[in-house]
Image (tube, rainbow, N blue to C red):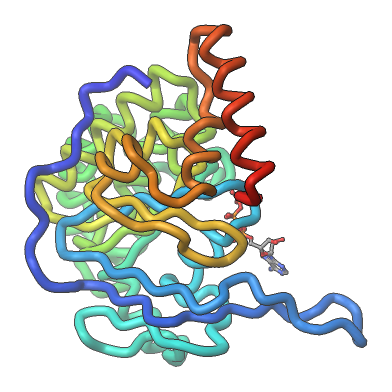
Length: 289
Ligand SMILES: Nc1ncnc2c1ncn2[C@@H]1O[C@H](COP(=O)(O)OP(=O)(O)OP(=O)(O)O)[C@@H](O)[C@H]1O
């Protein structure tokens, strides 16, 4: 991917989020079936202002981990701590209070915005619910539109009047409404075309530079993760198999599964692509899969 996005220089020291030995199990669909274990004791931490890219093939557990951080997946064992406080088993009321600080941007900007509300109302809603006056909310909405590089008149329009990239900017603005410290970004550019992806990734980095927000950035796309992440965690089969500085993991992966994932990323040269397919097969035969 061609983008000028590079992660901000140095995240602050100390952990903001600590995921510690987390097990997530989904209830079995059939009455006699056993619960399905989607995460097998996952540990990960994120520092203030840091972007941790979470990569792995489909079904490896990336979204489940993001949902566990958001309080949307059932944590059976282990703990998640935010700013030192255990948050895995909060009541709905405590969770709502935390939602100002931990936010989410989903993959699909076509379904994540209420089609019947204007963009201005979508952005004002969380502010009004938390007690902000109408006048202050309107002022904040125009500031948010400016931050995500949308024109002020966007406030009066409906989501369907925008392109995919613009809708994702609205979703990002909504996540920013109450000045979060952490945003879980679940494949936030996968539904966009390549040039739009690049511009939205630049926006994520720019926002981090300005606000110091941290991202858990979930993606299956290694070129995306390279653009935005300080560190990368690689998931396979509900476990984290490798973590490290983004440049180190993407240029010299230690784990055979990570190597296979890198080799699966397409390259423009067909001869190189064939070579990589062969290398992938060899890794498979030594038990990486
Ligand atoms: N609500 C659920 N009930 C039962 N099983 C689930 C549920 N959600 C996810 N799973 C299973 O948990 C495993 C991990 O899924 P998850 O969506 O976390 O993976 P992922 O790495 O995010 O995949 P993708 O990249 O395709 O989104 C998969 O086997 C999936 O089928």
